[in-house]
Image 1 (cartoon, rainbow, N blue to C red):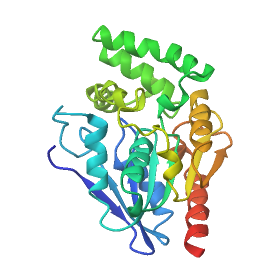
Image 2 (image 1 turned 180 degrees about the vertical axis):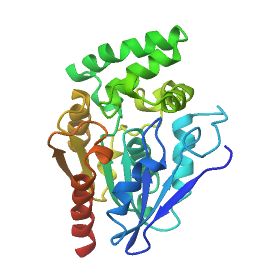
Image 3 (image 1 turned 90 degrees about the vertical axis):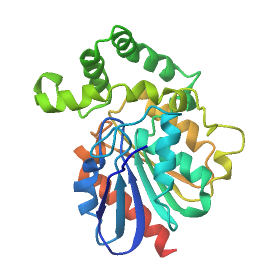
Length: 262
């Protein structure tokens, strides 16, 4: 899989693993992590094809490869914090290595399979169809523009720096590469009894203005997880760890502090 880049923040308190969204990198955590250095010793990975890690070799299942890389950082029990695609990886490694997880913070996990059969899932399919059409036509920049409009910070594509457009478009193939896991649950995360077996505290965190499917996913997960709480950040969208840093870091601080003080 090539070299994997890691970033670290903080030396105090318990260990935490930070897992970024698709098309992002560990850099996205910097501001949030700097607010938690007195509480946590954090490590963040760049998934293959992202940030300063090597390109993905296209061998095997992409979600499985990312999960293997993330799990390799679990040298001791840790608090795992994941956002979007990274949150689906966080959930997978918590289910596969429950003894190594103190707590799980899932910020808008895009496990679309959990919402299948709902109106929100149908709406998601309609909204995402232009992305699929663009990819099928080989129009990578158009596909990237569609994706970032749905799942970005809200910034207009025309205002993106040229280097950012190039970075995102060069990695857009990683979105369909993730589909077997997040759309079809090829790892069986939703199989009968699996979520019910996860006893660690779980925080489901979302933005008020996020795509409606996120609420459907959270509802599906919350109905099955035995130790879960849900929090919504008013005025925030999907990229809330970047757009609402102080609020999100405060919520995570309170969640983990309550666990460690028990």
